[in-house]
Length: 331
Ligand code: UT7
Picture (cartoon, rainbow, N blue to C red):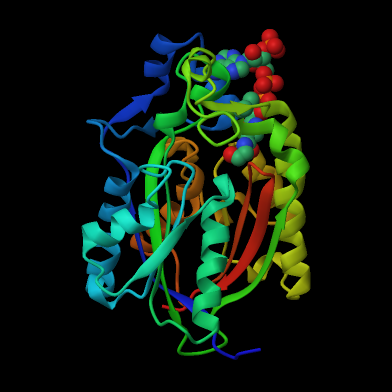
């Protein structure tokens, strides 16, 4: 095994300006602010308008990252994009981004792991660094969930929002810092509880698929909730135990933001106080692959993440896909 470790050396994010509050949702479906807040923790979400695609948000996030790290696009070796809402099925949004930012020497591709999109994509990027093959890997987690949300279905439409986040991976100057460990899982038997039925080769787009709302997210929320609490908490505790870390050694849990109650349950299992849980669900809802990099970028901007901090990134989502990553912050 190589002794090169991959470190996150820069972060960036973007959220659209347009805000959809819970009281706006009350005008769209039969719901209320009280139910949404108490059952999910969400107060508002951002929606990308004017027909802008996913790549628009991703490029804005990347521009922030490049400005912060003082690098130019032609230094980037690989662009990896975790998303379920690419601009188009093909070409990949990685290619669209490569052209838009002018990353002349980069190659890349998209990765589909739904709400675990960022952590799965991050671990793919880590392999490119640890192998010694590449020096600058851009990892994007972004979703325009408004494009696949059914605003007639109150079970799902109050949950989702749009946003983008990204991190840069580089070889760590000190192998004690960076991405130290990961536990990644899939279980395809969970597929039937959370999916978008049509638009792929199983059910190509057709009148029937449109008439039946099969191009929108379907979720058996109650069922997924139970599995998400257990799945996310199990891998978060497992990665602590595997690395002999106690609650006091962890600076932050950085969880996927699907439901505030899932975050709280996961932190409790880890023995962490609530102020060690990164949260943005109240203002952005569930932005799918964007939740974790959005948290990282905003908390870093606010000076809350420090060099040497131990972070546990954790996620659970469609697939099922889930996992945890231990990061010792390197800058
Ligand atoms: O992102 C990755 C994976 N996804 C998750 O991790 C999401 C997991 N699931 C959840 O977060 C929760 O299950 C939801 C937030 C989706 C739903 O919360 P819940 O507490 O599980 O509610 P429920 O589905 O059991 O519904 C309870 C009641 C139902 O009414 P009845 O049948 O008891 O009369 C629903 O019809 O709440 C009703 N309801 C609503 N009421 C007002 C469902 N949605 C709404 C709504 N406003 N928007």
